[in-house]
Length: 336
Ligand SMILES: Cc1cc2ncn([C@H]3O[C@H](COP(=O)(O)O)[C@@H](O)[C@H]3O)c2cc1C
Ligand SMILES: O=C(O)c1cccnc1
Image (cartoon, rainbow, N blue to C red):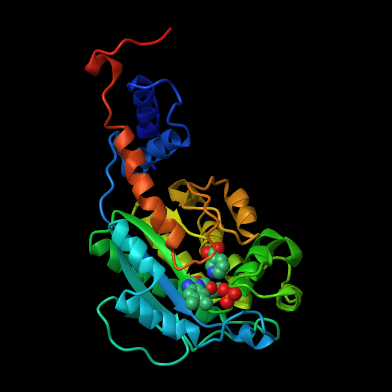
């Protein structure tokens, strides 16, 4: 991010044909996009979303309203274009890539499916470490590779999505583990578990957190808790940051992955844009910790990258603000 361009864009913003601050938060977005792209008049083209998919051993605790096989079935649905993310991506000029980092069962070859299975699901985080450190490192690298592909194929802004039955439990554990919050604050209903399911989720998260030791590094914490797709999401964002593109966050699981990326690379925050605020209660703690304001608040609780992709047209519009005419250029009188 270029500080000199940030200041130059801020100055230009004051000269554009509108009352000061009348475009609200979008002005801040525009200026930050300028600084990220290193030009006072930023432009965003095609987007890409990498939907990282993997299974979770913790489903054995009864923490999801849906059976585990839905993860694989939804990946097939993504590849056929039948999921919410496919439809939103069509509406938002965004390419969808699916990354298998740990789905149970085989998947067919497909041009948009990146095969990087580390193992078939995590171990049950309520009982034992979800992953070894080596597995966590491989998941991170798989995410980086997926982002490299998306960027090589022309993406100018990058989002991540998640698919993994049980992953709101892993995301709650990761959020609590990295932010030092109690399970009650960050455990929510996910796909819609009842009171009993909610209790089992808190219990599972509490047991996993009890294994954490002071001084563990962020990737060590992530290996303990999982999941594979959450760590891959951190990798997607780390690569996007390394390549200098704006990064759009989605809901709770994706933002938990983004939190891990931030713990590994604090500068990445400058590139983050929060697509939306999820209904999942832990999400607000993540956005608060990251210091991010969500662009949308639509009561979404789906994942897949849907909230991130919905925000892409808004980010493009924000970039266009800096292409407006100035008062001098347009011959419009300034106020007092
Ligand atoms: C049909 C279907 C499509 C989805 N797309 C995303 N998720 C979302 O729900 C899951 C997390 O919720 P939990 O922790 O309660 O299992 C993840 O796979 C997430 O991406 C879906 C869930 C279902 C059932
Ligand atoms: O916040 C999300 O993205 C979310 C919420 C519930 C289930 N899956 C994802």
